[in-house]
Image (tube, rainbow over all chains, first blue to last red; front, top):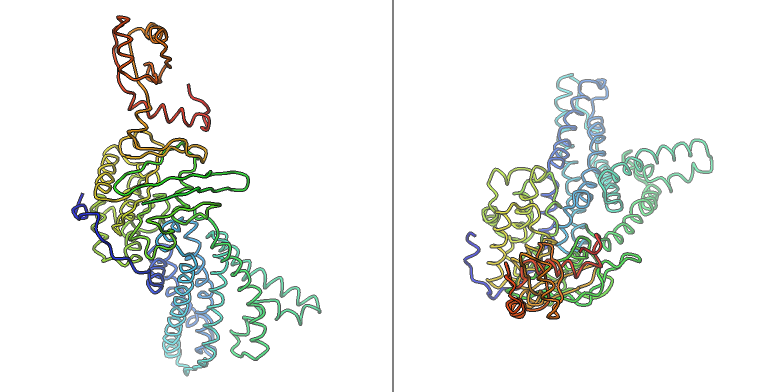
Amino acid sequence: MSTIAVESVPRTRVAPSRVPTSRVVAVELQKMFDTRSGFWLMASIVITSLIATGAVILFAPDSELTYSTFAAAIGFPMSVILPMIAILSVTSEWSQRSGLSTFTLVPHRGRVIWAKAVASVFIGVVSMLVAVAVGALGNVVGTAITGTPQVWDLSVSEFGYIVLGNVLGLLMGFMLGVVIRNSAGAIVAYFVYSLLLPTVFGLLAANQGWFRDLQPWVDFNFAQGALFNGTMGAADWAHLAVTGAAWLLAPLTIGLAVLMRSEVK
Amino acid sequence: MITIESLTKRYGGYTAVDDITLSAGAGRVTGFLGPNGAGKSTTMRILVGLTPPSAGSATINGQKFSDLPNPGLEVGVLLDASAQHAGRTGREILTIAQRTMGLPSRRVAEMLDLVSLTGGEADRRVRNYSLGMRQRLGIAAALIGDPEVLILDEPANGLDPGGIRWMRDLLRDYADRGGTVLLSSHLLHEIEVIADDIVVIGNGRIVAQGTKIELLQNAGTLVRAADLAELQGVLAAAGISTSQSATGALHTDADPDLVGKVTLAAGLPLTELRAADGAGLEEMFLELTADTQREGALA
């Protein structure tokens, strides 16, 4: 036995204070980085944005060497990786069974899940800022190599829409993590949600006239698409709100209710 | 102080924990003994809020676990040493606990030292840990907040004999300093060696509970002679019924004093006569759980 054995017990203790939420968020943030899979997911954000930038410089025609081309190229891998990060932050507690410790150290699942959501969104926003910087670097370097004029064709509001779009995608992954609570299952479900469903809706809209006008009110991906096009009218916001409530908020609410009462084994 | 009152947990039609009431006091090691599937782990999970009970209550120092403001500082919990993210190192797992509880970072090194995990081992990923190393890490995580109460589910699993000895000394010392320890085991010997109080559970019900001394007093007498049949006859003639124990001796509920007098009077030389403490608890355990055990009644 080492030092702690020497202290004399029983002693009068000061009642401990509640674990602050900021600390729970900080710990959850740390947990996203400190595993090998977590580390490489984070690293892949930087790596893929560098690869995408390089690819644009190498392969894009000189006339398209504009900032928005870089932004779009970097944005694509990021829109896939960010939801994975959100999914794993939730599901690993069950798939890796670390929830046994997590939920006994903070015996309020709602607080832990909230902290994970905050940490995920934080990483999403920081990643977008990294993308902005890498894209800007690519635009400067790329146009210098080709000798074409620099074109900065992405406004602040457009960037804001893209951030929102990616955060919604990330929250989609988060929601699936909460509902499914299994890493593999949630990742598969995410691809069904983000790849299969839009295809089905697209086919339906192309072949069934009655669905064409309905699609913006039903298809969350379609409604999100407007964010990436750079202009958002009142109708676009309404589409986003309605489909977001149906595809994101409703299942998230049900998933949370089940998660609160479920058994952690 | 752990208090469990009329606790019940049902899964559909199956009752995993059936109206159990028990308490574990400060300064004592309380052993929670039962065969696999008896309801030990379910009870412990309910105690720390991971499983909602169907009825009844479980409190620690009078408070529900979820009402504890910073539970790690008050209750050390080790439910399953393997339930850790395999991709983290031992040191990272302790760091998460240390940061969540708001402790100084030196506690991580202190705990690694306490459980004899070397720096090299602490920096390996838990995926590469043996079960014994995971148990040591789990103990370190449970103790890092210097809690007053310890809840350990099968902590001796996977430890080598030296490790078991170390664990026993550590828990003994912890209880002697005023701590409350509730530990479960299906290993009778472990419980018998370390526990002050014993709660025996079978099929979700408590079948016996009390101090170890009380339970052992009821354990009867073990007697052995060169000719067991003759011994059995002599004792039967004096109205003492016996049963053959697993170790090839006779077991009886009569006390050793009486057995000695009867056999002396009959002129029968004994090779062994003692209170059935060691073997006694095992026989009590098998007997008490015989009708609830998977293997069915053991002879």
